[in-house]
Image (cartoon, rainbow, N blue to C red):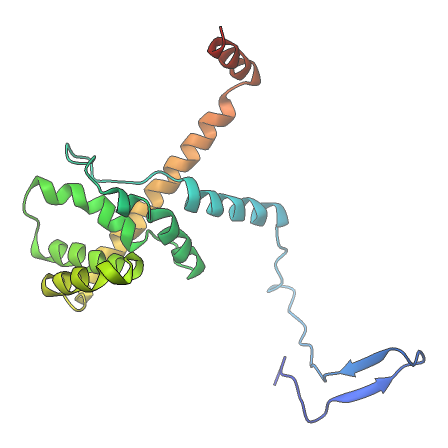
Length: 200
């Protein structure tokens, strides 16, 4: 098999220098066809890595536009950065469940929601609670939430949730790009003038 270490045929070859030991693992190297071999743009890869890292740490929190958008609890907002990092580690290019809770919470104060969105909101809330609350608070909170949250979402609800997570992810990254673009447009002179004005 290509790329598999053949342990049985492991050979130890003593080279001319007796202090050096060469291990022959019998790797079979398969040539990559020219049409499959694509050059890696190192600069672009670095830029993407840095942007993804900044996105996890500094992108704004997207919430439903409402008169009720301020009362999102601090204990939810404080966990958003960590939840983004966990999503990034899992390779999920979408918003976390914690971000979904933060986004939907103001909407729940506006008016009753359709049942599928109630299920999504309570299910995401349960995932957030399971992940972040400490053991003392967890038992009472989880048992209370398990009474109202569904055990699992239907295929239709999963589709709605995935669409919302992708939408929030896209919005937050666009907001970060805009803020970085605006920061680039500021000239060093204007920054110096602003600093002087602070102390004048």
